[in-house]
Length: 569
Image (cartoon, rainbow, N blue to C red):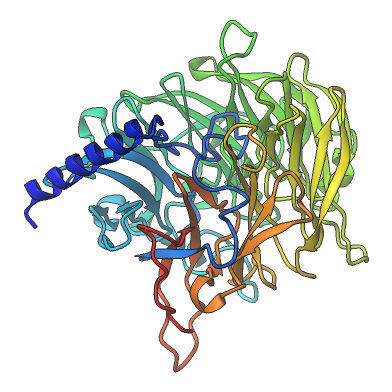
């Protein structure tokens, strides 16, 4: 079929669909875009406009794997989705954007099972050679850096500007003995680099301070030793990037926490903040969650929120804290909350580990830690509203139940605000907000495997607060520690109104629906009746072909999504 035929097929199909809906007295469900990490800049983790999937059709025999997309590297960045992208010579298409650790960016068809080739693919020829993991640390020869299995390239979730049809990302690369972070901007429809926005922009920074590794009272941003882990934030025309070190205790303590602000129209750096200018550590990693913002803030200018992990506390140092940050070229810390037990948490590597989650209709921010505690803080004064033990090791023993997956939020059909959290070696738990504090609700009968990491990466889909529509989705290991290795994963779906009821999981028909290797810290993405799950590649086994990296897509197994033939092992 020629390209014009493809366009006319799309137009005719749209006309027929609209005609059928008009004849039935209904209107077509709007197509939903996922343009940023965790759906929105408040980082609630909830798509509340899902009209197709519900607690009835997500069930064995009705729901399963519908297609896969092969990519060239591990997927740390959350998939993003833009509907009705006008692809040249093709027409309007829904597109899913995938970035990999090998410095690749793919634009795949998000809904057509048979369109397996990308519409375009930006490679390391543009984004730079990814960095072998051995280059980023100075560990003794008998120690190995194992947080990454292969190369380090694009790790943070990109962000899409719908108004300018631009996708922004940060790529880490090496060449000629130098290491670089660069901020790129690409056209959504073609993958063309937007040089008119001065893309790519080299990411560099310095800051006055007497902290570790300072030179004559100034800290330098050292690209080789830093990791851009949190998803990008695009807010009021400004891009916010955040950085952490690769390891807390590496020799020399050269890593600090950094936040940088860039004008999205010019890629000019307009603000820089170091979290521990006179101390050590203070990385912002947030288990991959992006910085947060709320345009409805009562301040004259909306503020930005960050969660800082292990690090010095006191004076200008804000390790182990929830930060409220002035935006853009005003970059600076307005207020912060630091748990009173910060010293103990620092000493035992029980740092604040989730990104900030802003309540959608209340002036609170929520963040959780590796000791299983969550903190609700009033954004007006950054004072504690509630500290509660949200997760615990249900197998017994002294190993704390780390919380890495940020909680997700939903108001049910009775208008009760609920959060869901799934820590390591624990059950999926629901907590209900009374207006003043969270109280424990029900917990699932399913718990994360023993001695596994990092617990459940959660996402929620619902049609507003319509009864029977809300589903809690969880990606987690089947077994094993995903922090220091690659382990098999599973996707689970629970009724959000009653999490003791598991609706479906990808191991019920593993020959068809098996996820593959778990992509740590990457949430499942739900949009327009599909669930998109990132994966890692199988570890190499001598004598056995290596399975490629994949984006795995699930949906209702009817109509346009017939049950595919089993793929075998």
